[in-house]
Structures are given as C-alpha cells and as structure tokens.
Length: 558
Ligand code: ATP
Ligand code: MG
Image (cartoon, rainbow, N blue to C red; front, side, top):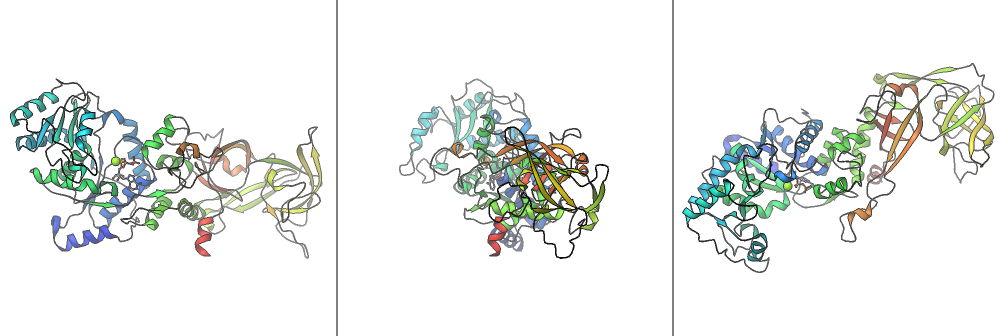
C-alpha cells in the first residue's frame, strides 16, 4: 500500500476535522470505494479511489472496497476481478474489508419488510410506463399510485410472494411511501425493490427480487459503519432519500453523505456506458486497449500509478465541475517516466546506412549510461559496426528549412559514436531510397575535433547487432476536445490515426531482455513500455506511452 498518497486538504477534510473536534463518530473515520461491477474502472474512478483511501490514511481510519452489485444482468466476475486488480495496481489495499452489497440482501429484505410494516412502503402494480407518467415532471407534481393505500397485510403478503418468485419481471415493485408532490423527483415514492429473475454472480439464483441502488447504498454504508460516504455531485439530489431511508430504519449508524465534483478530462470520454459501447462495437480492442482511459488500458499503455495519483493530487477536490486538461495528466506522466525510465535506442522506421570507410571486420563496443541523471541505473553497451540503421525521418533528400539531421553531402553525429557524412543515396527501381552510403570520420568517436561544428545528433543501431521488434504508436483516441459535446455522436470524433503498428523496428540489444510492462525512453522518440500481454522474448512488442514533447508543462512555464 502506498503511504505517500497525498490529497491536499479540501472541504471534505474540513468537515472531517470539525467532526473529529466535536467527537462525532467516536473519533472514527471510515470511508469506502463503492464500484458497480458493470465495467472496468476508468481515470475518473481513480479520483474517488485516491480520495477515499487517502482520506482514511490521513486520519488513521479505514477504507472498504464494496461492490454495489444490485444489477445482476449488467455485472460479471470479469469486472469484479479487474476492478480489484486496478485498485491494487494504483497502490491501495482494502486489507480484509472486501464487501458486496449482495452480502446484505437478507438484511436489506428485512429492512424493507420493516418499512412496509410501518406503512412506509407499498407494493405497486403500475407498469414502468405508467409509473413514469404518474411520476410527474420537474414542473408538475406526481400523482399517487392507485396502490398507495393498499393495506399493510396485503403489502406484506405481496412482497413476500414477489420474493418467492410468484410474479413475472416488471409486474410489481416495492416503493417507498414518501411524497408524490415533492419538488425532488427522487422523493416521489421511489422504487426500492424490483422483480428480476436473473442469476447473480455472488448469490446465484437465491433471489428474484433485487434492491435498487439508492436503497441499498445507504443501508450498506450504515451496516459497515461508514462515517463519511463520499460520492460525486450527481448524487446531491439523492441525499434526501439517503437520509430518509436511514431515518425510518433502526440502523446501527447514520453515515454522512458528502458530494464532490467528478474528474473530467478533455479529449476523453469517461462514462462507463460509452466505454462499454466502444468495446462492444469493436471500435477499440477491448476494455484494456491502451487507448482507453480505463485503468487497465492506461496500465497497458505504460502509465505509472504514481503519475495518476499525482494528477489527482494536483487537480484537487472541489464541489464545482470542471474539465482537466489531459495535457496535465501527460505532464505528470512524463515527469515520472523521465525520472524512472532507462534510456535505449530503437529505430522505428529503419533505413540502412553503410559506412564505406569503416572496415567490415571492425567493431566498437560503446558503453552508454542508462540514465543521464541517475548513475545507479548503470550502463548498457552498444556495438558499432559498418552497417547501421537510422530512422527514415532523420534523412531528407530535399530538406525543409532548418532541417538539422542528415542530408546529401551533409554531416550528422550518431549519438554516443561518430560523425558521418552522406555521400550517396541508393534507390530501387521505383525510386525509393533503400540505403545510404556514408563515410565515417574516424577522429570523432565521442569527441569534436577543433573547429568542427556538427549540429544534428541522431540515434542508430547496428544492423547485425540489433533485434527486431514491433512498436505500436498510439495517439489520443479522440480528435475532438470535447467528445461528449452536443454536435454529433462521440463515435464520429474518434481519431482514425490513434493506432499505427510498425512491425519491423530495430532495437539495441539491451532491449532483448525487456520484461512485460517494463518502461523505457527510446531516445528522441518517447516513452515506451513492453506490452503486458503480447510482448514475448522472441517477439518483443512495445507500446508508445507518450511522446517527449510536453506542451502543457511549457505553457505553465511561460
Ligand atoms: P460512470 O458514470 O462512468 O458509469 P459510475 O458512477 O456509474 O461511473 P460506479 O462504479 O458507480 O460508476 O463508481 C464508483 C464510484 O466512483 C462512485 O462513488 C462514483 O461516484 C465514482 N466515480 C465515477 N466516475 C467518477 C469520476 N469521473 N470522477 C470521480 N469519481 C467518479
Ligand atoms: Mg454509479
């Protein structure tokens, strides 16, 4: 478990401070992270995870993981498992406090019977369409269900028969009896149980009625002794219902719900519904596609947990909705990767270079530091040979203005090695460049003889002493800053170039031992990580995590 998570003090911590000062909750602080297992966790969830766990850490309290699993048809064990893996990966530990709302189905049922017995809930036979019509609108009050005054005995009988499976899905619901004229639609006799003859991933076929989220959530919090139930702003209007339910029942404890603003990122969609749609419609390659803002996708892409936690820290916790620049997240990522990633050379689009004056049998073994600022990472060695590869983009036959790399007749330094000059371009019948013939200035191995100015430095690998690998270049999944904006469907704003696969890249030999998820900086190209699933010793696959140029950091410093 990380101990360095830091969430800057915020309005929630002020509430907790005053609760502690007033002796509320016996000085306890107990939070929970409550995902519905109906998808993979995304970057937005990271905010809730960090807030809940960091708050517990700060106050020496506890944080539970609780699955709010009241929707069996949309949930499955794959989601349950990936959610746990993502929270662990982010660096948090719920110890022995893994719970499911479904653990409480018996108690939830008994509490519902208690509500019915007090005349605070009734069985309603309105169809979903009718119920919607009776509910009213923001400007019009709702109307009472014809079943609202059903006798308590009949309600108890019907509710137990609902539970016993006597009725089909949708025929009856159990509704809280609150106020059909309330200005808050959530208080207009909300449904608290519905009939669903569905298999549940935790309770199997035991139940054919399932409690609704709002009803379940507050009672689960109460059962677990949660002191501060932190949730996102859209639940603000549900708080009166949260409190109403707990006030009616003889629960051990009444938690306080506090709302905070969701994390939104530009160039990103963050609704599980849309992310699921991208997966189901095969617009991406699964929930863990490296382009997805899911924690599994980001992990596979090469994001570090520290960078994600740092973004949450910088973005802060507030009560007003805003959109965070994804450049800020990328900035946090680059900062972490710059510090922690060993350097290596990998030529993404190889162009052969033959050094005509460098003897075929000669080699130079060149030691190079793995990290310019961190000697503890040690050195790797590269073999310099007569035949090399450079990147196609580092040579221009007709260079644009200010091009500082290799041009016909021009010179360039090969990083950590010699200065070479391009003497001849070799082309195939179609006119494509196949090779460059260059001469090597043998006096320039890692030094600049007097009066010699060579501006450009490019990376290289030896042709015979390098390994082949696949590199997957990723860009943002959306080209549009706000994919959720009103104009058009978000799926029309997908970036057609978000994935480019380069299957014949050449990497320096030190990369041969790259382990899945190991991260590197490929010099001059960006940060890469070996794919967690597809990279194998005999078929290395690297994902582009992020390029080197930090536009956000730059803007902040000017
Ligand atoms: P989505 O809206 O993406 O489908 P959700 O709220 O339905 O997410 P849950 O599994 O219910 O998903 O979320 C678990 C917790 O994470 C909830 O407390 C929820 O408020 C919080 N959460 C979800 N999205 C965000 C976000 N973008 N920023 C901060 N917290 C979030
Ligand atoms: Mg939710």
